Length: 290
Image (cartoon, rainbow, N blue to C red; front, side, top):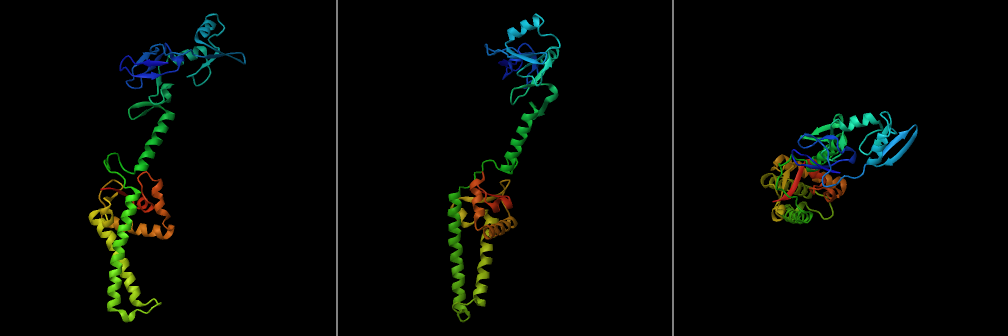
C-alpha cells in the first residue's frame, strides 16, 4: 500500500501488514499511523501455525475472525510479508506497533535497531552497503573529488589518434633533419650496412629530442603540437595542469607501455569511462578536450 506522511507529505510504499500501525517517516522522522492513500492497500496474506502444521494464507478479514473466535491465540505463531521471522501473535502486534522505521531507499520497514544513518537518511543495512559500494565505485572511476574536474570532457579516441599521427610526422621531420645534417658533416663515418658511431650518436640525439619535444610542450602548454591541433590537453587526475616532472613521467610510462605490451596498453582506453590508456592510469593523467 501507499502511505503519506502527514507532516512532510512524502509518499512511500509499505507492506499491507502495517496498516493501522505506527511507523516513522524516513524523511522527517515523524511517527504516524499508516493508512493507505486512495485505496492502494492490498489484502495482507497471513500464515499461522497449528501445532507443527502451517495454515494459510488467509486474508486480513479471515485472520481477524480467527483471532476473535480464539483459533489464533496470544502464543500462536503467525507470519505475514514484512516480518523477518515467525512470531507469537502478541509479539507480532508489539513488533508492528513499536514504531518500525522505513528505509528511505527500498521503502521497506525494519526495526529501529536494524536502521542506519546514511548522509542524513535512514536506510537499512543492505541498502547502506549498496550505497557505499556505489559511491566508492563512482569515486574510483572518476578518481577525483566531486567538482574538481567540473566541465571537463574526455578527448575522443579519434582525436587522440589524429594527434598522435601529427606528432609522429613532426618528430620524423625533426629526426630526418638531424640525420641529414649528420650525414652531410660526417659522411666519412657512414658505411653502408654497418652500425657506426655517427649513426649511433644521431640515434641518441633524436631520442633526446623526442623526450624534449614531449616533455617541454606538455609541461609548458599541457599538450603537444598534435594535441593542440586536435584541441586536446593533458591534465592530472584532479583536472589541474601538469608540470614538467609529470610530463616526463608520462612519456616514460608510455614508452614502457609500448615496449612491454606491444601497444596493447593503448586498448585500455576502450574500456575506461574517461578514455585513459594504461600509461594515463599509471601516471594519474587524463586527456580532455581543450
